[in-house]
Amino acid sequence: MEEKLSVNHLLGIKNINQNDIKLIFKTADNFKTVINRSIKRVPSLRDITVANIFFENSTRTRVSFELAEKRLSADIVNFSSTSSSVSKGETLIDTVNNILAMKVDMVVMRHPAPGAAVFLAKNTNTQVINAGDGTHEHPTQALLDAYSIKEKLGDVKGKKIAIIGDILHSRVAISNILCLKKLGAEVMVCGPATLIPKYIGSMGVKIEYNLQNALKWCDVANMLRIQLERQDIKYFPSLREYTMQYGINLQTLQNLEKEIVIMHPGPINRGVEITSDVADHNQSIILNQVENGVAIRMAVLYLLAMKKTENVKN
Amino acid sequence: MKKRILLDSNHTKIMLRRIAMQISETHGNLDNCAIIGMQPRGIKLAKKLLELLTEITKNKKIEYGELDSTFYRDDFRKGDKFLIPNSLNIDFLIENKIIILVDDVLYTGRSVRSALNSLGDFGRPLKIELVTLVDRKFNRELPIQPDYVGEEVDSRAKDIVEVIWAEENSSPEVWIITDK
Image (cartoon, rainbow over all chains, first blue to last red):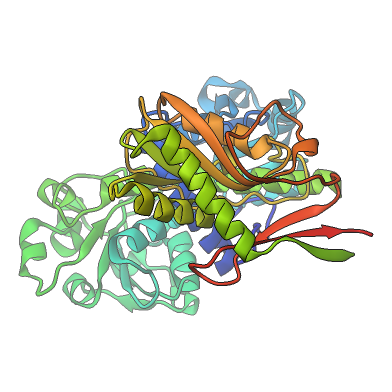
């Protein structure tokens, strides 16, 4: 295994290769032992300052990144657009360059515009980690999802994963498809026809409009949230109808002949895509995903920080 | 480049047994002790010592662990080296135990420093002792000395001293690589 990442930024799963993913998983294994002991901190990143720049709301990703940074002993500055000068009309590059002028080494950014992270990586002199850019990519989520599948089922290769729900507005879906395909899994997307993008088949995934068929086929069901905040038109008649067609309840789960693993990237709309008894069921690994998120993000930060020295030396 | 053998496997076999005897003389049947090998190169030596100590003391329950201190190294982001961690496996409490830390070559002392810091995050051992097969005593950069030594070797900083395990379950050979 090559012992370094092939990239200097984590902009999307599209930009990294299988070896990178495996290296991140291997490093995350080590960090998982670190975060499960009583002193959960290692000194690796003590000379690094990371800025968490969030132009969009977030709970899990932000807390997870912040914990990952703290457990690596990095210094952190947090920034959210609502309480900043962005509301006075400052541009993205100006905002970031001003933060960088205060000697920040890495930027973790979430932004509502697709491609914002790529734009930042091209136009500023810093390392960028994409924490979600619009409907484009959310690489760390895909990595932690694949890592959680690997942890639960032993391997990702050859497994059948169904991604169910709002595929059209989901960056998690795109990154998940890319990551799972790179690791050799079979992927299916399932949802109402209006929420399945027209050209998704070109990514090499199966398309299914019937939830029952998808559940019978898969080993893992990754339930996505209906992103009402990104839906400017009506894609289905009502939430109730969506739930009846595409929601999983305990009965659906028990009617299946085999045990499938239930995942959800959060935040859950309880009673919409899955009911509470499914979310809290022992086949659900939703909270394992959250735990693994910290280990995966520690691994990404650690491996990228290592690349920085190489750049400086060159 | 010149490669020359310093210690052959017959030699190291006697040495390892001697170290094991010294440890059991000091700590009896090792009831409150734990052998911890330092990743990556101290592991084979630690396993060998554990085997010898089990034989000598007849205590089949000597605690054994493997420590990786990559995240505590002081050369992260300082050189060309990519520091990828190895597995860490300490599934017992080190609190109030005597830890016998094992590595193959003691050189600058920096690895041992990182191991000591790392162990500190697992608890407060009663005592930590250091075993090394080869002590390159003139190359130390930190005030760290071993408690049990196989052989002291005089070498220059640019030489490479390697412990090579040719066969599983045998004893290792020690080689030195110099530029003359």
